[in-house]
Image 1: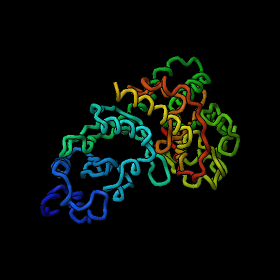
Image 2 (image 1 turned 180 degrees about the vertical axis):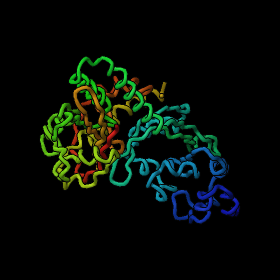
Image 3 (image 1 turned 90 degrees about the horizontal axis):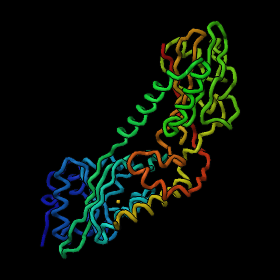
Image 4 (image 1 turned 120 degrees about the horizontal axis):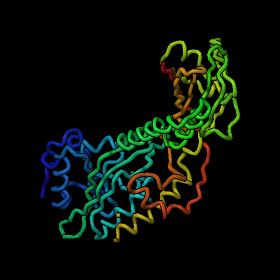
Length: 370
């Protein structure tokens, strides 16, 4: 039977146009004339949907997807079209693979909510969260011919909720402070609890008429000693590039982007936020959990931020750092909502082994709020 690709891929927006122009005979799916009716029918469904949908077809789970799904692929497209799922999602396949195979082998559809995954985007690992379901798609012979992946990215929601919890904790615990020094300690403790967003924090105290800011608290850089963690930082306004430019932030009252961290401070620690063997071990622990359920469910983006507040005794200038693109929950597995608690037991025996990042550092930011 002769099938016109223009009819098969009618509509479908940009992906429909891409599929019409693709020489399918050069892919593992082969010429469209040989495609089973079930594949053609299901492909029409996903191309016509405005919800992110991915169709995995055949034993190798070859990729076919609609326009709404494309942003999820990051820089994996267009090479991902008709490519095996294990190849496209190699960095997360130890988690996703067993779930997909369980459905492929006749198991029930899966449902996963706010699952933390680390995607490789360029040279960096990106922290992401997804709610998704794998459902079987029958082939012409009645057996499972493929899988339908309906998915919604929840990264922004999960990260926002996490940051709101941190701000809530900071506000709630601030009332417990009986002195300035205790307030500094509480602030550092709260920031330390959110390692995914704040791999390090430096808290500096500025007395009213002093020319120096004194380091009053440290999180994440306990072992580091170097020019980026001075006990005293000059705020004399001399424009020195040897330390954090607190004077400039205080003078302008605005966020300051620092894009010369390596030149300013030299090599800086990036903490444990590099995808390495430790994350692979955690993935294997999660794989064991999900397998059981299915049969029964510049790595250091340094972002110094600041706050300057007045108090009875003086002013406080806070430097902190954020890193969302390359973060891993290594020793706080059980604290993530929903799924985290469920596979914490399986992952508890994992001993993290982290290696430092060799990526160049990302620009930093300093803030001042009056």
